Picture 1 (cartoon, rainbow, N blue to C red):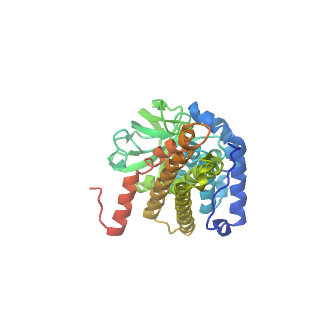
Picture 2 (cartoon, rainbow, N blue to C red):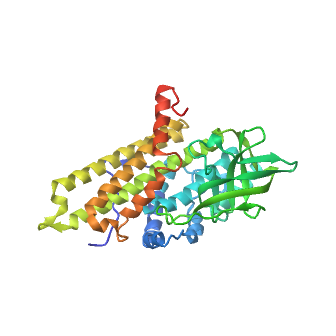
Picture 3 (cartoon, helix red, strand yellow):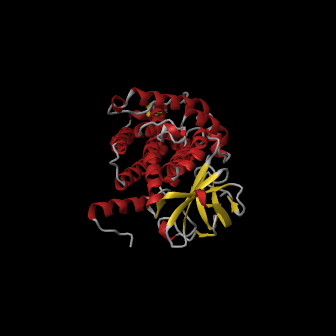
Amino acid sequence: MSTYTYNPPDYYNLDDLLTEEHKLIRDAVRDWVNRRVSPFIEEWAQNNHCPTHLIPEIGELGLFGPQLPREYGCPGLDQIAYGVIMQEIERADSGLRSMISVQGSLVMYPIYAYGSEEQKHKYLPKLAKGELMGCFGLTEPDFGSNPAGMISRFVDMGDYVVLNGAKTWISNSPFADIAVVWAKNEAGRIQGLIVERGMEGFTTPEIKNKWSLRASATGELVFDNVKVPKENILPNAIGLKGPLGCLDSARYGISWGAIGAAMDCYNTALQYAKERIQFDKPIASYQIQQKKLAEMVTEITKAQLLTYRLGQLKDQGKATTAQISMAKRNNVDMALKIGREARQILGGMGITGEYPIMRHMANLESVVTYEGTHDIHLLITGMDITGISAFR
């Protein structure tokens, strides 16, 4: 087969809706991905290697927390710019997008939204540059879709609190310098704390033997009588509203990112179908293959329109949690289905590392579950339209 080239589908001319700044940002990220990620990502995934060596470059490009204000050392971009960045990164790999979006949406965002001015100025500029890396601790071994049931707790000891508990399935935890951790206070209310590596009793064991997100580092957070200074408590969030607000930001980025993975699978399948000869002609000439490809580009186009409108709502401060849930659920499901169809078009070659499809499929099996499972997001929509919760 000829050398793979990336020609992103834009069937409804959505580029016309982007500003020149959006296009310049997207093209800069695309060029960086093409040079620094795409030639190596298959090897990194095969070897279960997280490319932390790219962190300084990612910080230099302004990809950590790009939607946060300039006064804290961030680019101050709008939500659509953030979306197109996530799309380009996940076109390369969901694991790399996870590393970047966790830093921006789940670490930097809560410090910005719920932190004190001292906390913002202490942490955000360094996080934006990649001089510090962070992770987000909400999910526990026994509490995933029901975070309110968490058992991690801290008690007031005067100048500090003592934190005990554990979190699991935490992206970036094995190398993170700080963790934004959600735990219950003595009154049973959920609060956020900034826990720093090096605090006695704080460990971050890595989760091994993953079949998915192999170019991303995943681990646990374990707190054994960890003394956390009171100035590390986020002062402006009490209750589940705090962590769920962070998840809204992250899920929005995922809704764009999943489109990138789908576009890469579609583009690979289209190019392959045009070049693969069977019965003396390219397989793209057969009806069944055209059906698959036409359905792929249709679903990608629908997802593009969904996220663009969601980006507008986010910029206007009007996007709801339920709207973000709908986009995350729809777009990840769409990307998974496109990955599976693309794999069939490639036949046996689709399972090899010569092409990105099987890696995207395996990654998306994690994305469809994390930050709200496929079914939980459906119930969020159901509750929104009926006014009745099906969770209890």
